[in-house]
Length: 299
Image 1 (cartoon, helix red, strand yellow):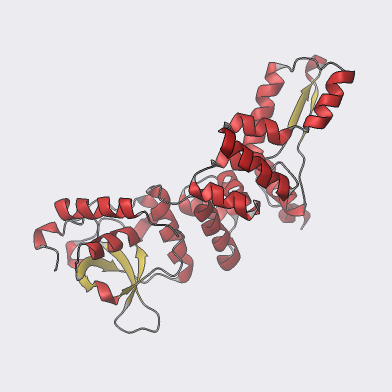
Image 2 (cartoon, rainbow, N blue to C red):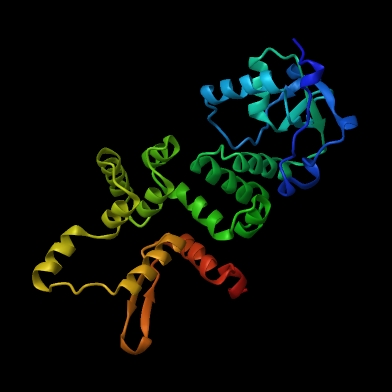
């Protein structure tokens, strides 16, 4: 069954981030494309699609029409066929409804732009889990040579946000699975990255889930060696932390995703320590602090 003509209505485009590719589209550019001629986006960052969400979207489309057309590109080396650029959820939903044709706009989109557009659409709709987002950024870096700053400009995120999201890929497999499933939040995952041992990360993640730890509790467990703390407390009673230093330290740890420490001294002086685990982690921290790649400074 084809969609009734009254249901082919255009809504607002994806916004300025997508620029010329998804602004409000003149009706003259719309085409009705056979859904069987549309292949998936080969660089779709989203891996999981909720059946419940798709059912809700299909119901909405059935009641209100398709408010925004699909964005397609001609399929390379396949004459007369198309690849999806944005709109996979919409395509899946109209297939559920039995539509044989769908309103679409076609554009010439290169491979570099293809992933950016799919990422932006998913991010704007809050459809990606943290790992899918991180993997999308990593693909832009590995396959298309984009920097954290370049990715940030493309998807409307800060450079530090992109850097910290990519760092989630350093987590061991079981922890990444918990993060993807929503059992752990990004805050929990960032705290685990302060540990140097992946086995400890997995063990602590399991405890956090079983006992329902907050992010603050996770940070406490990940940032403190309980054995050393016990030994130190027996020999030297700890002095209460300066609340200003503690607040600054917590903020630095959140921004840099590392076990930064702040020690204030009398007279206004003090020390800030920012540890890093390896060369790659140093590059990440250096970029966040200075706004420049270390290689740029050394070249």
